[in-house]
Amino acid sequence: MFPSATAPRHGRLALTPRSVAAARRAMASASPQPPPPPPPPQGQHPSPANSNPKAVRVVVKGRVQGVFFRDWTVETARALGLAGWVRNRRDGTVEALLSGDPARVDEMVSRHLPVGPRAAAVTAVVPSPADPVDPAEGFSRKPTA
Image (tube, rainbow, N blue to C red; front, side):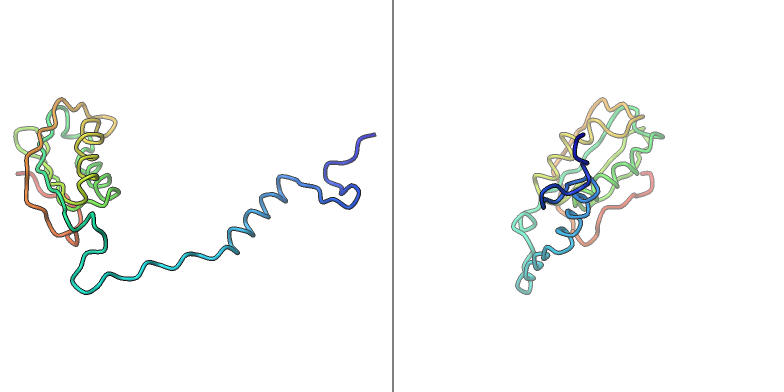
């Protein structure tokens, strides 16, 4: 007869999926959380990336209206920590102003906007330089222009 997988054998503890999960939860709750970073000195930005923001105005062409493109852009830009806005244009395109960390702006322009939400069919993304906006403004949806 084989020893039971749940019964201790020769003074050893038996490891079960339930006991391992409980031990992991106990270790996670017992581990100290690192203290938050100290606030930056008065009048300075919290990170070097924000000290030199990048901004672009983008026109997105294709099947981009009526496919949740503006709401998707708001969600994606906020997830990347960008400021700015997005709106439909009467010519059937979508226009956006993206401002923030240069790497995040580039990621939005080169990786996210060319794909868009599932129902979109983007044929072109045309960026042009723009003036950065205050990060405190966040990212919003504007009315059609």
